[in-house]
Length: 276
Image (cartoon, rainbow, N blue to C red; front, side, top):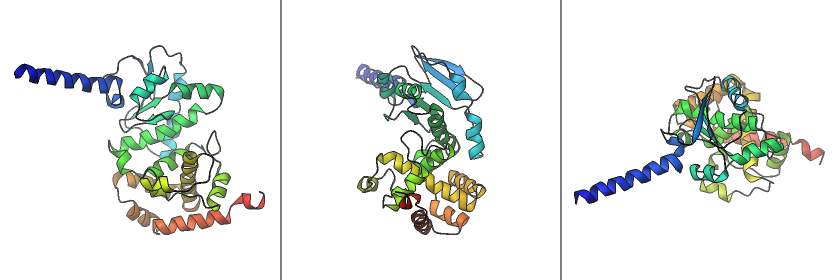
């Protein structure tokens, strides 16, 4: 009986170790195998052996502009992983997205993202800054940040702070306004819920439209109420989960009413309706 118990423990330990080292729990693993570690001024970058990417300073120098926009400092150097091949990336990632940020403070970059950057399809700088915006908030919010911080706001901040609207697959501000004015709109708190699937969005790229929509909401808050007030809102949500209460305390209006005002403003400022 004792031998059987020991055998079970060994099997379980081996399986868990495999999950951390080579599978889906990799981004939380305390041990990294198969990657060369490069500690730079602002980041720690792990490059999978066999990868020819070596422009690490290009990534490292992005940190100051991220901290400046958010008026926050990284608590510790973010860890960035660059992968050699698609299979290695997919086995270790919960998502097939080009880039993925995790509450552990790690960011993983797919090999096809590096290829698309070389081809001029996407901008590596913009996408890395986008994901590091998440990492920065995760570091301050804690390990459950993805569950406790408004998901729409995470994306809105990341897209807005990197000027991502109008680049690669993301509609511009004017294009997003026009789409919203035409009736395309996802209520922010429906994002990443079952209600999102039921939203009828007649747009070219569903996910990038949603991200640009959220960035437009952030832009509206900053332009109409000031960036200082927005930063207070952003930071208070790091400490508290009561979004609606915080929003009303800072902006003096219920969030639902604010969204109605925003949509009315968008309809009145749809530049495409007179030119298209």
